[in-house]
Image (cartoon, rainbow over all chains, first blue to last red; front, side, top):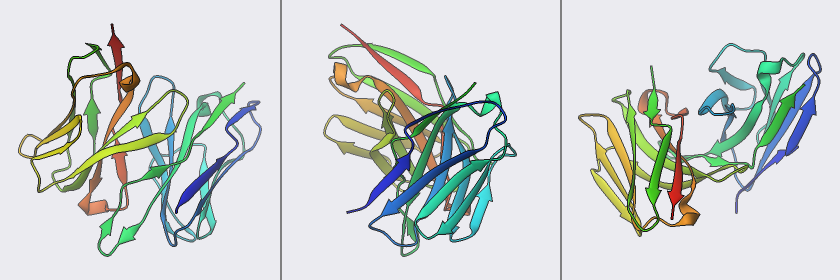
Length: 115
Length: 112
């Protein structure tokens, strides 16, 4: 069966420090991978998605970047965190079955607080 | 571009039906989803509907799709305290089939 791992669960970082959040998927090949952010009291914003190794699509200009060094690994990074980067970060995956993409399956999320 | 909108809050009495509404803008949407998020957790898929369907029922859940008005609703029958959560509507657009766009979420609270 497929599983998704996202870590850490919580993180408190000072302003200006770097960030690296990691997400890995098991039990599937060539998944679509996603990073979403949920800010306090707001909805789910798509930050990045990837359809393959090294292929990253960015949805909004921001202080963050994403990389996909391996098929089932998706990393969210920042060189210098801002206060506005605080939020709940969710990794998700979906797969293509023929011409159809499945629904998204989510990790448990990382709560990032920038202080 | 794609946009999905929902009201932010809904309060219902235990045992009543809850109806959560969603509107979307992309007429080429293929799949529309409802997810549930409990406090501090990730999102769990509740149900989904393909764009060529009008209705889908799954136990206490009924999804209605009005494609002409681009309106999606989720009805929860006999609402229980365990249904308290944030409910997200989401769409997958055919034109960019890898992307899934979410609404802002509706916080459902249950009163006794």
